[in-house]
Structure formats: structure tokens, C-alpha cells
Image (cartoon, rainbow over all chains, first blue to last red):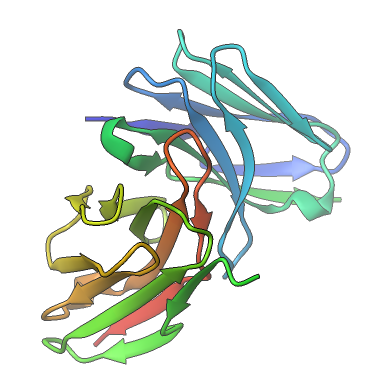
Length: 110
Length: 112
């Protein structure tokens, strides 16, 4: 059974500092996805990582994938209040299934 | 630019009642999904349809049925609602494996 584990589950950030969210998964996959969800809203796609060593960056967010370690990281540089949200990673399973981690709730404070 | 449309957005049911959540996408996507979201548990896959004419169980299918009516539409039915089915339900779709999935706005269901 595929397990997708995120840590931490809650992250209190200070504005201007750097932080990392980790996503571990338990079975072979070279496709990993990151999403953002604001309270009461739907999920928005952030990054699609499709191969070992893939790195994607958008603004203050950078995601990377190490398929050998079954680990993806979402790095936040110089956190700002607008980044407060819940971040999910997700992994493709065989046959088209798509499984999510529990999510990391991020709160950025001055 | 509708994307993935879910109806209804809010619903209150009594225990034992039945209802159907409707989902339609206008992006010509092949795969469609139903998830439920509960606090602290992320999104759990209920059922999915990899392509028109096929459906498969996800992690938490008990108490639900689905119909892939055509390429555009994928409905989720609760035959006899239970309080444990109180949740936010998301429909999603994608063109095929290796691409991101796109979500609807969610349906808030309360079973009393």
C-alpha cells in the first residue's frame, strides 16, 4: 500500500526566513505533484515533477524530487504572509490512482 | 472557462437519505476522480475513472457508487447517507497520467 507522508504537518514561519516541507512516499514513482489550498477553497497545482532530479521554481517556492530516496522537498525562501496556506504533495500510483499526503498547514507571521 | 464543475456546493442530508453529487469537466480530459477531504487526513480517493467506460475503487469506496456517464461527466452517489460521510467532496480530472489533475470547487456535505 502506498503511503505518502508529509512533515511537518504544521509550520509556523517568520517572514523573511527559509523553510522546507518534506514529502516521503513508500513505493516507486517518478511523478510527484505539489498543490496549495487556501481555507475553504479548492486545490491549486503548484508543481509537477516527472523525473529523478527534477527541480521546479516559481517565485519563492522551489520543489525537487529524489526518486531514489523517495523524497520530495518544497523549499520556501524568505517567507511572506501570502504564502500562508496548506500545501499537499501527491504521488501517482499505478493504473491512474493519485494519492495525497495529509498536508502541511503553513502560517506566516511578521 | 468552466474547468471542473460540481453541484451542489452545499447539502444537508438526514441519515439514510440518498443523493448524487454531479461533476462535469469541459477540458476533454480522460481521467476523473472523486476525493473526500476531512480535517488532518488530506484527500482520500473514493473512486476514479481512468477513461470513459471504466471505474475503479480508491482508498475509501464503501458507501459510495459512481457512474461515468460519458467523457464529460462523473457522478458520485450516496445510497444511504451516514454521519461518517460528512465531508468536503472534490471532483477532479486530468487528460492522462503524468499530468496534473484539476479540481472542482468542492461540495460541502453534512449528514445529520
